Image (cartoon, rainbow, N blue to C red; front, side, top):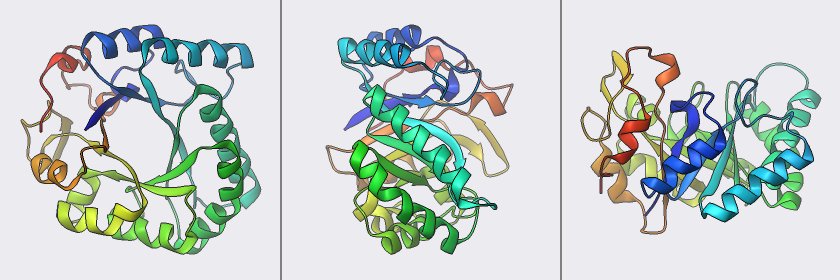
Amino acid sequence: MKWAFSTLGLPGLPVPEVLRLATDHGWDGVELRCTPGEPVHLGLTPAERAALARRFTTTGVLPLAVCSYLGIAEPGEDGPVLADLTAHLRLAADLGSPFVRVFPRGTDATAVRRLTAIAPTATALGVRVLVETHDTHRSARAVARLTTAVDSPAVGGLWDLMHTHLADETPLESHTALAPWLGYTQVKDIASPDDLTPLPLGTGTLPLTACLSQLPPTAWVSWEYEAPWHPTAAPFAPLLALPRPH
């Protein structure tokens, strides 16, 4: 199993420092939070993108995903959403990332229409669009409805364990629904459904062992530590030295 971590837990940290943490502690990849104010954003110049891509290649750490905050089914015209997603796909291709993460945020019909429209662009760029189990489509079954309807290798699902658990799916149910389309899995840990403050993996209530047992040995797993939303959370960087669950 290959392990990544999300830069969500390290807001504003320059990419060289992120890569140092990854290499020092034996992490295979990094999810890149892509938003204004972060080191990775859509405004990076071609030269800046090339320099970042070289850093990843040199260290051997994979930029696993460009994590957008785009809602694929959010209300409004299709054009601006597709243009935004195209920009994220081009950034991912420039950095050498295989995936772009999107959120659902709307109806099945809107999501399927837009995902179908973007699939040829994603295919041409060699990047997959992954719809995360989140907001309007919190369960794996809900995301699988979208990916099945689109039926393109360029469109898949991202399994966020916390959200499927809070949607009352077991890990077996989640993996069974999403396995044909699964890009990778996000894990985290929390104290309870009423307290989502992030905890070190294996110290909370999420079914991590049951989740990991569903995945093949070649699967990618990423630790998303949602520190920015929880000011009382312990600093993330020191936790990267802890042993990872099996």
